[in-house]
Length: 184
Image 1: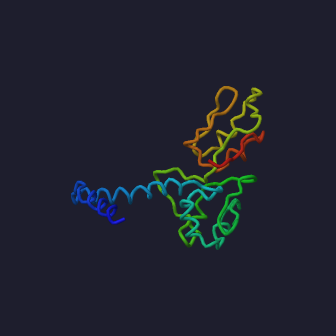
Image 2: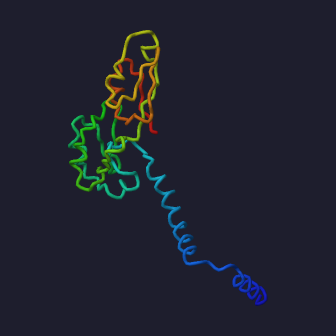
Image 3: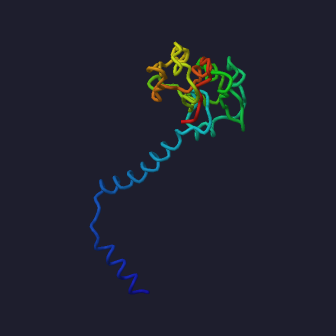
């Protein structure tokens, strides 16, 4: 056993030495990798949230479940489920008025960057029979979209996922109920 330990230590001593710069580069590269991975996972929402909600992990830590955001919501689409705000997009739409953000005392809904599009975590998809497919001149969904994410193409519609905030205003405006909201 002692021969093995001696060989191990001899091999370690004969290895190349590392400069101070190399040492710090190695240490910092190890520190930054888990942060990047964790940040990528934190952005995924598990349920439709108010559009200015912070990342899911941070929301779980900041939100105390007080319900002030639900009381402040003019269209009344915020429900408190398991102590966290969830948008009920089945019967209504988010007007992106930011009243929930102003009412939140814990800053759990304070993710308002002018460079990024607010997102509920949901996205509009064509799920049913669009009346444009029957050659009807309908543009209700594209006119209702505040972000111009819907284009009327020939006899159907095209939804740009980069522009869609998941507010469900198109879903409410659709007379044929052909739009459904799904999680990204």
